[in-house]
Image 1 (cartoon, helix red, strand yellow):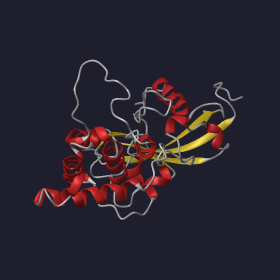
Image 2: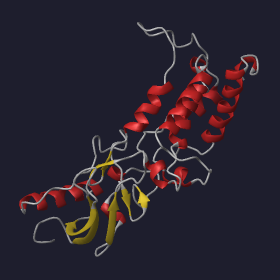
Image 3: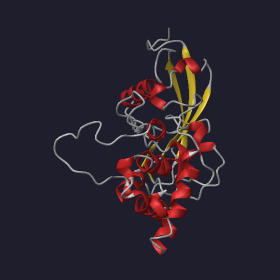
Length: 264
């Protein structure tokens, strides 16, 4: 047990510190003591407690639920979004995956569409604007409809649920060499587009959301698969060609409404 009571694990952290969007930023080295039972964010809480005690500026990082649900947390650890344990968020990462004496480099998501606000915090409002562009369905509001009034095929339900696992954390963008948001966008498009309730806006949705993705400054997808590898929701790369097919059909339908028969 160390003198500060946090345990026998000592780490060297090289962390990106940036005061604001206009600040050039730089890496700053810190020493921190932790134990294997802490989560990664709890370890950073310990660091911040030490910094505040010393009268220094605490590290800024995003977090909320700390249960891998909300998608708020996220930064790059030793070159990997969310750290070395793929299929999980930073808040689900525990110190038992590291060993005493390890050196770790922490930096924010790097993408033109994710401007840095401070330290490890980036502005991910671009993802919200993509959803606002078309991530909805037209339906009657009020009392809940009868569950069996619209029958959903099991295959469609499974595809929709798998796509809906996306939590919008942005790790796919950070991992992509092109800073593409196609895995995120296609997941949001797919989970609505395969359901009967999503058919009225199916093609306008894909056109509007894809156009917004381009407008936000995200790169183009070349299907390298880096996004799928780091996605904490295990969203499959298959949603991207599904989206591309609907985009092609939607483009034809926009030019000639009779070009896509039956909405297939």
